Image (cartoon, rainbow, N blue to C red):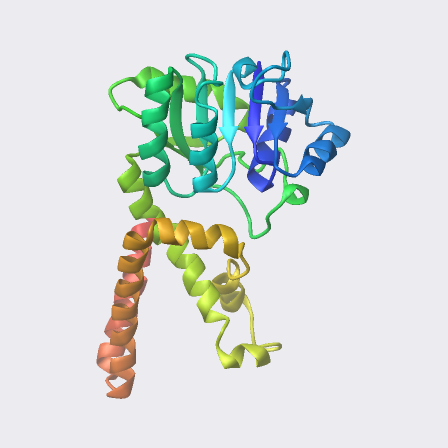
Length: 281
């Protein structure tokens, strides 16, 4: 089996390592040729992935193509190489938003005879880049799948089988709209809040006064600004709604303290604690 991977950052390189350990032939394309060379030297890349021509190393030779770049980069790559993907082959992305990507790529795939599926690995860390990649990054993690249609369960079976080397723990089917709505809350809002929280003037004097709460809330404050700004803007309608809701909730706590209304403040805190317990089951 042969896998083609586009983009050799944290996600792409981790996939490459996982599939290489599983015995697959791993072909990689990255705009930075030195990254491909490092992958070869490290032993988890067999050769460079090309559009067409080079025998055994082109897109048509791949049973699976995983595109691990930013959303617009995914759309551009699929458009550019629409005629080069294997007929009936499987092409998947791994980005954090789905509406813009799937709307474009489903149409291109249908027109050109390959299958495109939106995918979002619920895995990663605060670091980016090839040097932080590892074959076990996805082990036990959920994979959200956005298929072009929901009346063919063979698609899910095919994805589970071909993604086996990554060792995902579960698979969740979702429509693109639902995915982006949920991700605005579970991921994007958390990054915005964490990034804004550390801008407090008090943050410069926190050493010696911070423990678990500070670490938990600031874990994702350090981020790839180029990537996250694209994700935020592509999903701004959902993210703005979440930000507005958070501001509304925070204002209730502020108002209770301005009025010295302890009963109201206690109730707000109890409501939040109860909600967390209910959500965690």
